[in-house]
Structure formats: C-alpha cells, structure tokens
Image (tube, rainbow, N blue to C red; front, top):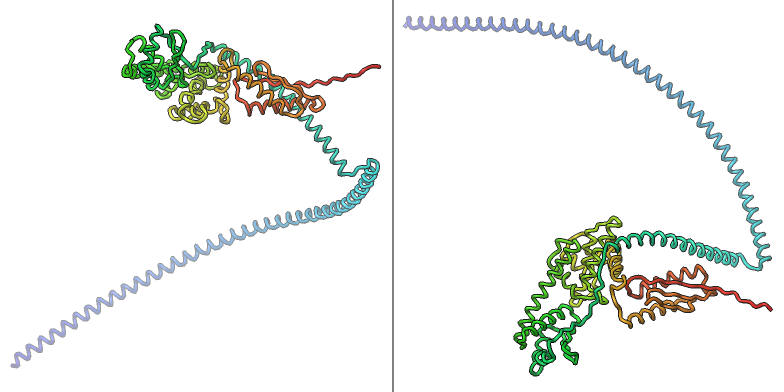
Length: 510
C-alpha cells in the first residue's frame, strides 16, 4: 500500500515537474518572440520616421516650387490685367469722344430736319397755290387733269408697245423664215414622193354582162351572201362589163374586190363558194397588211416594231385622207421628220418612228371613239416603250398641248406632207365652205370694211376703215384674226392674213 502511494506521489511529482518545465520553456519562447517583435517594431518605426522626414522634405521642396510658380503666374496675370485696364481706359475715352461727336451730329440733323420740314411746308403751300392758279386758268380740276394725262400716257404706251412688238415680230419672222426655209428645203429635197390619188369605191371589170346575172343569183341570193360575208355594198347597174364595190371600210372593200375577182375567174358562184372565197381573200389581205407594215418599217429605217403595231400600220395601206394614201403619207412623214431632226440636231431615229406611227389611230378610229392622234398615242404607249414616241404622236395634230420638240417635228412634217402640191384633193364644196368661213371670221371684227378669201382659201385680204383702224391697230387686227382662224377652222398648211389700210385725201380747186 505504501509502495503504491509512493509510486503515485512520484508520478504526480514528475508530472508536475514536467508541466512546469514545459510551461517555463513556452514562457521563455514567448518572451523571446516578444522581444524580437519589439525590436522589429522599433526598427519599422525608425524606418517610418526616416521616410516621413524624406517625404516632408520633398513636400516642402514641392511647396516651395509651387509657390514660386504661382508667384510668377500671379505677376504675369497682374501685368496682363494692367494692360487690359489701360486698353479699356483708352477705349472708354474714344467712346466718349465718339458719343460727343454723335450728339453734335444729331443736334445738327435735328436742326436740318426742322429746316427741311419748314421748306416742305413752304413748297406744299406754293404747290397748292400753283394748282389753284392752274385750275382757274384751265377751268378743270386736278382729278380731271390726272385722268387726261393718264389717258395720254396709256395711249402712248400702247402705241409704243404695238410698234415695238411689230418691229420684233418682223425681225423674228425674217430670221425664223430664213432658218425655217433652209431646214424645210433641205428636208423636202431629201424626200421625194409620188402623187397617189385614191377613191372610196372599187370597180371590178367583168368578162361579159352575163356575169352580172350570175353575181345576183336566183332571187338575189348570191349578191346577198357576198354583201353579208364582206360587209360591203355591191352596186350592179347599167355600167357595161363592170360592177362597183362601195364601202367606207377600205379593208372590207379590198377583201370584197379580191373575192369577186376570184369568183369571176373560177366561175362557180353560189353562197357556200362565196363564203369560202371570202375567207381566203380575208387571209390574203391579212398577209398583205402584215407584209406592207413590215415593208414600211424597213423602208423608213424603223426596225423592231411590235407585231401589233406592224399590223395596224399595214391597215393604213387601205385608208385615204383627202385622196392621199395614209400609209404612203406616214412613210413620207417619217422621212421628213428624220430629216428635220437631223437638221436641227435632234434624234432622227425616234423622229422617224414617231412620224411613221403618227396616224396609227386612223386604222381603228371606226372601232374606237376619240381623236385619231390620242387613239394612236394610246396604242403606241401600249405596244412601244420608246421614250417620247407616244407623246409626239399625241401632240402632232394640235389636239393636245405641244410641249416636246418631237411633237413639233412630227407636226411640221405632217403639215409639209399634207400641204404640198398634189398630195391631197378636196371637194369643190369644201373649198367654197372654207372661203365663206374665212370671210365671215374677218367680217366679224370691228373696223373691217370688206374681206376677200383668195387662192382657194390660202390667203385672206381684208380692207379696213382708215378712220376706225390706225396703222398699229391694223397690226393688232391681223394678229387677232389669225388667232380666231386657228381656234375656229381646221385646214392643212397655213393661211396668210393681209390687212390693208388706205387713206385718201381728196380736195377740189375752184
């Protein structure tokens, strides 16, 4: 038992001694670390103090430099402010001097205005007195004198304006006529065409008068079948060995003529055979129309036309205008338009195409309502997209406002082709009607004594009353008559208007 106690005591003493040793060892280690840490702290503090001194020295040096720089800038700014102050002082002195001068001038102007106002009042008083004196002398008022003066001035201005306009018109006409004659002469010389009169009826010769009875048939069935199939009137009269085909449609008339010739040559004439032959003739005419359209386009140098335009163009072969073949007229206009465009520097190719197609509307005017120029313009616009062609076709006849150069060219070429000698023929009644219309228009103007339409309506000579129309009034009268003729009548070419004023002084010696 004592041994155990002793062992426990020894173990406890050893444990306590070991713990004390460990405690003091750790305490020694901690004390040493604390000293090392204090030494490091002191070293860091010393280094920080040294750096602080260096920073303070650098800051002090920077402060001294900044202060010196600020002092230098301050001196410069102060000198600049002094200079500006001196300049402002000089400007202020100059401004004061100018203000003084302006005030003096203002006082002088005020005095002059007062003097001018006084002079104006004096002049007005003098003017009033003079006007009163003039009114007493002239026995008319100021307003009446003004009206008389204005009338005189208006009359003088009107006479001067008319005289100047007349002089300018004469000069312009001389220059334009010379240039126009040259251009038209060159264009006409380059285009030579034939005179081809045509009629609206066709005469078919017969081998004998016995053929008339066969054409009529039993109870007229053959002639009715032929007229029904072709849409024409077949006139069988006492004309020996001939029958007449009448129709306003030239294509139908041509189909009937071809069919009738074929029936006469064949000898077999009955309704079924008539329908068969008419159908063949219609196909033949269609082929001819297409061939003639292509031929016209080729001869005028207008390739690439749409087939529908070629077909319509070929139909013009069977149309006439005042006895002139429309297809030949269109080809002539195409050549003339191309020549005119070449002379004035325009597009000859487009001009030729516009001239060739300008009367295309006449091919369908019996089917479509409206002026042929507008109808043709719509057709060309539908089938041809060349710029300017449709517009020129629509403007060539004066039914629409002519705005394009191409419209003027085509219109001029159309007038040349239609007005040249031998191109067209007109009925005697139309000539008489035109003469009466021209004289009626001329006589409708005030101051006209007599009028005479001469040269088949190409010229009107007008005698005026000299006491009613003066020389300048005659010029104005001719211009007014021309304008009314252009607005009222339709005619090919141009009409010359001549106004004649004659003054006679007659006295007798006794």
